[in-house]
Every structure is written in C-alpha cells, then in structure tokens.
Image 1 (cartoon, rainbow, N blue to C red):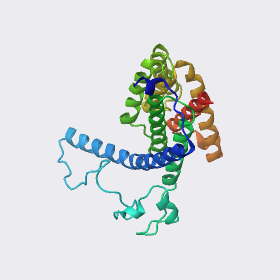
Image 2 (image 1 turned 90 degrees about the horizontal axis):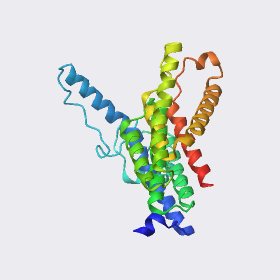
Image 3 (image 1 turned 60 degrees about the vertical axis):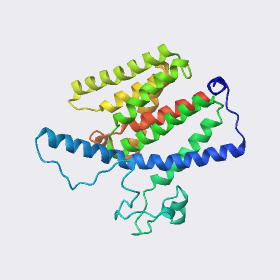
Image 4 (image 1 turned 90 degrees about the vertical axis):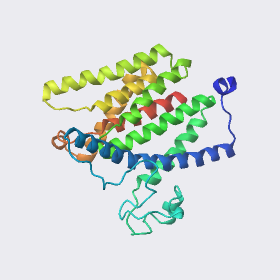
Length: 279
C-alpha cells in the first residue's frame, strides 16, 4: 500500500498505449455526462417547481439518467447499434454522420475522447505515484466535463464542483499537491475573491457578470492547487476568455451584451497550471 502512495509510476510504451485506450473509453463516458447531466438537472428542476406550485407531475416524461435510456441518436432519437457506438472509431468509420438519419455527429464527441486520452497519457508520463495519478485523472476528467457543459449551457453543476472541492482537500491531507493549510486557504480565497468581484460588478453596473458556479469551481481549484495558484488561474482564465470573445464577436459593443462561459476558461487555465507544474 505504501508503494501506491509514494513510488512514482514508471510506464513502458505499451502501458501508455493501454492508458490511451483507457482515456478514450473514459472520454466516451464523459460525453455521456456532458449530454445527459443538464437534461437530468432540468428534469429535477421542473419536478421541484411542479411540487412547489402544487401542480400534477408529468407522468409521461421519460426519465433520463446515466444508465437509461440506452445510447440514442441526438437527431432522430433512434437507438444506436453497438458498432455505431465504439469510441472514436465509430465517428471515423461513419465519417462524422449518423447511420440512421445521416445528420452530422457533434464534433466534440471525438474531440473529448481524443483529448481525454492525451491528457491521461501526459499525466501518466509525469511519474506521479499511483494514488496521486488517479487524483489527477479525476481532476482532468471533471474539468473536461465542466468546460463543455459551461460552454453549451452556461452551467457548472454542483454535482461536479462540490465533490471536486472535497476531493482536493482530501488529497492534500497527505500534501500530494500542496499542504493542507494552503489547500484550505485556497478554497476559501477562491470563493471569496469571485464573490467580492460579483458584488462589485453588480453594484457598479447592475449586471451579474459571474455565476455562483464560478465561485465554487475556483474554490475547488484552490483546494487542489493552493492559494498561491489563484492569481495565475484568474489571469490565464480572464485573458484567454476575453481574447477569445473579442475574436468571436469582433466588437467591444457586442461583447458587452454577450455572456462569457468563465468556468470553461477556468478549467482550461487549471489544466495549463497543472501541466506547467508537471514540466
């Protein structure tokens, strides 16, 4: 057991190939979470609102979770065959089109699978002890899901951000990434910094420029990386997010009225900070 906690993992080329395959499989599961978690939350919110208003629950609504229904086409809702649901390979075989209705398969499906494989391999090559490597993989997987959900839905679910925060603190009980005092201080400062910024912007402009999910995500990142990493995380996320928004909208006047998925850029900044520490 002590070996798992302290000895760096030394992997051969063949083992890295196995890890890449694992990353592709995990990426396929992450795609499932990215698609279904917002739908699951929407169902929960609708049912809670119906109960609050004493309205009858809609019994004919099909229940969605991570297990049911089986994988189906996003366009025509037809169930996918096993051969059309193989991570990465099916997308290449079908040339980016569904077999059932010949509609375009969302491009982020293969991108998430390939990116997760790459992230897993890069993390594995860093020589972390086995337990710490599992933590890094969990962190990276959570960041991928949060980035995509925030990009498409402007949402950072508590079901992901809160466990990420607590796991960061648990890993740092053993000083895996930073000391526990640094992790606790990072979690508190991460939340408070964006909370203060939220109210300053609202007081000055009357607009809510930052969501509460961003507070929790930065708190979680502070729990993993410590308070010292917070300035770098905020600087990288702010600059990259603004540059992308300016490139996308080409106009400051348009940018003022467009929401920016800040959690997406926080996730990318966290990945950059993690890999900068590796190198």
